[in-house]
Length: 213
Image (cartoon, rainbow, N blue to C red; front, side):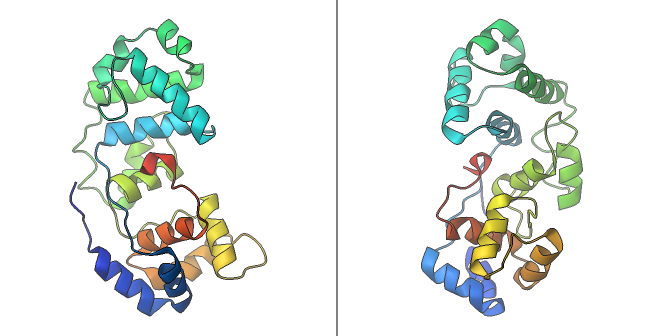
C-alpha cells in the first residue's frame, strides 16, 4: 500500500513544532512505519489480540490459521472462516467470545455489509463509527486501523496506555496524562499526530500494537 502522507514532511513539522519531541526523534531514529493492507485482516488480527499477551494471542491465532489451511501472510477469506465449525475453532484455542466477534466480522464481509473499499473515502470519525459496527470492535481498535492500515496522518489515540506512558516520561509529567492534557500536548503535532503517536510508542522501546504490525 502506498503512503498517504509524506514521512519527511511529517518529521520536519514535528521537529520544528515541538523541541521535546525533536529529541525523541533524534534518539529513536527515522519514521519507518509502513501501512499494512487489508481491512478484514487488520480487524481480525485485532480481535485475536484483544485482552491477551502477545505471545499467547499469536499462538492461538496461528493455530486457528493452520486449522483454516492458511497463515498470517495468506489471510483467510470471510467464507472460509464461516465454514469452520465451533469445534474446530475451540480445538485451536479460540474463546467463545472471540469466535462470536470473528464470525460477526466474517458475516458482515461475506454479506457485503462491509467491504475493503468501504473505509478509504470516509473521514476518521466515520471510519471509527463504521468499524464499530462489528461486535468487539471499539474506538481504540478503529484508531489503530486508521493509523496502521489506512495510513491516516492525524490520529491521537488518547486511551492508549503506551502513548500515555510515553507522554508522561517524555514530558516529565507526575502522572499519566488525561485525554485533555494529551490533546494539549499533541496540538502542536497536528496535522501529523499519528507520527507523534508512533514516536511515543517507540520512545518506550516497546512493540507497536499488534494489529499495526
